[in-house]
Image: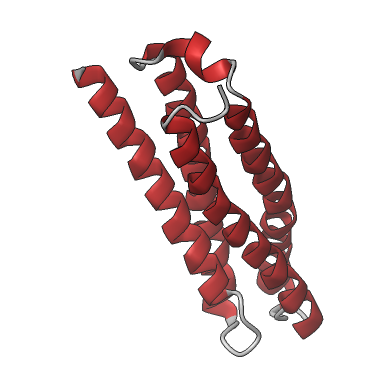
Length: 150
């Protein structure tokens, strides 16, 4: 029971960290706020977001293996696959902003130029899509935890 509580805590902590940092990205990635310091910060914020996402995945899988309900209960429920599918979609969508932040930082360091407004808007839109999709995952999770889908 203690292991279950610790795994649940670590999973929740990773989720909250991920949400805080995607929210930070959404707040920082704005045409009117983007300056050299923000370009540098976005790359760092995105790195923490990525680490938190990996922690969410690892702790979630650990809960299915070592949690009270076990793998047979979780992996046969289609709602787990919906959660994972949403998580994978978010992960794939996050590739573009990550690569963009690194490109912006590289350009800034080499030429001193900030990104174009259209590029900022396009990137922010993807960050916002990620943030909204992340918000759907707990909806699926609460139904999964209560045995729906079985």
